[in-house]
Length: 356
Image (cartoon, rainbow, N blue to C red; front, side, top):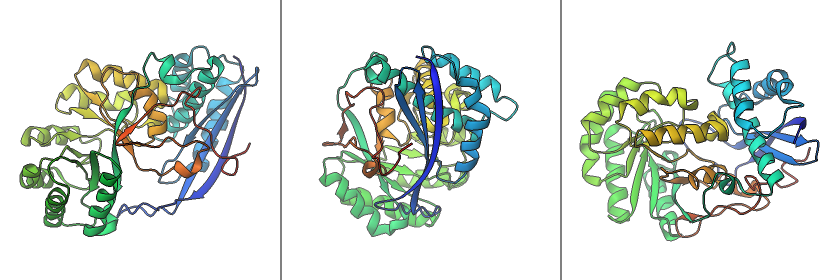
């Protein structure tokens, strides 16, 4: 299982339903796809969708800094390859571009390993293929008050038991409070409502708004302040009974340890594009020691193998962004997702999306 080649490809595909986040304009899915092949002819893929650009820089990082480290190496011990990349990029920094580039390679390595063993990753990690709870995300603030509620109702009609709406950025605090109230009144008390702030409030705003929406029993309030405002998160958590969650914009377990040690965050949302499978597994195991559950950010078709294998799973997030890109998309049924039995991570892009 010797790595013989690492190839990269940039591609851009229109969204079927462009997300209206209220602060990012996203019309196309801009992807960096990585393909790793062994001397035995086994191929694994990984990809990045960084949302805010930088794909050419990421591709250069892979080809100039990481690829030379890995050609000729064996994929028998992927954790050691992750450490090799981590140490080699120390001077360039341990967040941002370098970690995202590492993540794409790491995802491809694990996919290649699983395909070599002819086993899905959840099975390699001694998990199971039981259906897992998934919430309907993408009730975007940019849809407006009525549009958010309509999107939530569509999810509920498809069997979802929980949805995620958005606040801040293009709403005032009072409008946010009213939107949460109306969402609860429309959906009733049996549907969970997650609320995503996307780092749009100050600590003081968050504390104030939380007092006014506690009666609507949110499932959680997500990322109210900047991801690295650890003291701010401590203040917010101590001021409200609403569960506060975060983690999607933090890089690797190193960046999440302050949140774990605070013991105030009940659920972390690490992103597989900010550490890859190797570090996400480590993060989950570390979080479990602090009694913290894991609800990975986006990419459920990849992260499901992790959630199916760890001791502290919470939710998967479904937005449907990439369903039209895959040969065989992983689709929810009645508010659950079932892990694929295909080898590796089991996801192959359609030929018109990516051919090397």
